[in-house]
Amino acid sequence: MKSPLVVLTGLVICCISIPILTSVVSYSNIKQETQTKKNTSSQSSKLEKNEIIKKVINYETVNKETPIINVYNHKLGKVQSMNMEKYLYGVLAGEMSAKFDIEALKAQAVAARTYVSYKQGHKNPSQHKNAVVCTDFKHCQEYKSYEELEKVNGSKWIKNSYSKIKQAVDATKGQIITYNNEPILPLYFSTSSGKTENSEEVFSIKYPYLKSVDSPYDKISPKYTSALKISNKQFVEYLNKSYGDIKLTENNLKNQVKITQLSKGGAVETMKVGNKEIKGTDVRRIFNLNSANFEIDFENSGIDFIVKGYGHGVGMSQWGAEGMAQEGYKYYEILSHYYSQTEIKDTY
Image: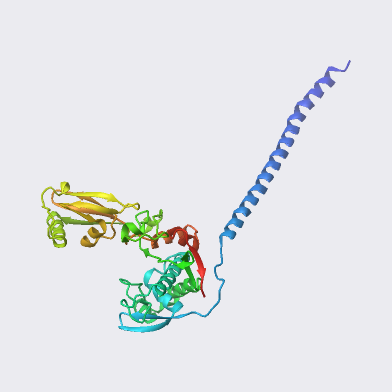
C-alpha cells in the first residue's frame, strides 16, 4: 500500500494540472475559431468589394466625332452652331449646381444629352426654326455660355466648378437613355415629395418609362417643403379671375373646397371648388405654388397651403439624384431608377 503522503501529493498535482490543461485546450479552440471568423470576414469583405467592382459599368463603347447642333439663343435672338458636348457644359451649369456629387452631375448630363437626341427625332419647325433646341429653360433647357458663367461666378468658380461640370459631361460622352432603342423624353425637375409622378397624371400623356417611383432622399433639398398664407378674400379673387363663373364666397370656405383625388405620387389631381372641379396643376399655377403636392389648412381669416416638393414631379428628381449619389449609387443606377425599363446607349 502506497504512503498516504504520496497519494495526497498525487491528488494535489492532478488538481493543479487539469485546470491548466483545460485552459490551454480551450484557448487553442478559441484562437482557432477567432482565426476562422477573421478568414470568413475577410472573404466576405472581398466578396462585397468584388460585387461593387462588378457594378461599375463602362458605357464608353463608341468613339466617334462629336456632332454639331443648331441652337436658338433666345438672349441673342439668333441660331448658333455648337459642338454638342460644349453645349452640354452650358446646360449642366444652368440646370444643376456644381456642388452636387459627380455621379448626380453625370446623370444630369446624360439626361440633357438625351433631351437633344429626343428633339432631333421629334422636330417641330414652328417652335424654333432651323434649330433643334433653344436656350430658354421655359421651353427647352437652361443654357449659360462660358462668358456668362465667368462674368456671374468669377474666375475661381470657373477653375474649380466649371472643371467639375466638364468632367461629368466628358465622362459620359455620347451617352443617351433609350427605351426600345429610341431616345426617351427625359423629363426632370428639382425636388419630389418622396415619390415621383406618373406622366399621364400631370401631362395627360402616358410614357411607359415615366412612372411613379419612390424618391426617399429629397428631404435634403432646401425646397422640400414650403408654405403660402393668403386671406380668404385673396383666395376667392384669384379663383374668380381664372374662372369667372365659379360660385365661391369668402364665408365658410372649408365647406366649399375639397380635394377629391390624389395622384399615385401624392399630388392633388382634382379639387372641387365651389361649383367646379379643377386640376391640382391649375391650382399650382394660379397661386404660384412650388408643386401640385399640397394640403390646405383653413382658418377663420385665411388659408394656408402646405406644399411638398418643387417642380412638376415627373421623371428624375435632381435632389433625389443627389441623395442617391451621396449614398454611393452610380449615375446609371440613378437613371435606371427614375426612368423605368430604360437602357443607356453610347452614340458617339
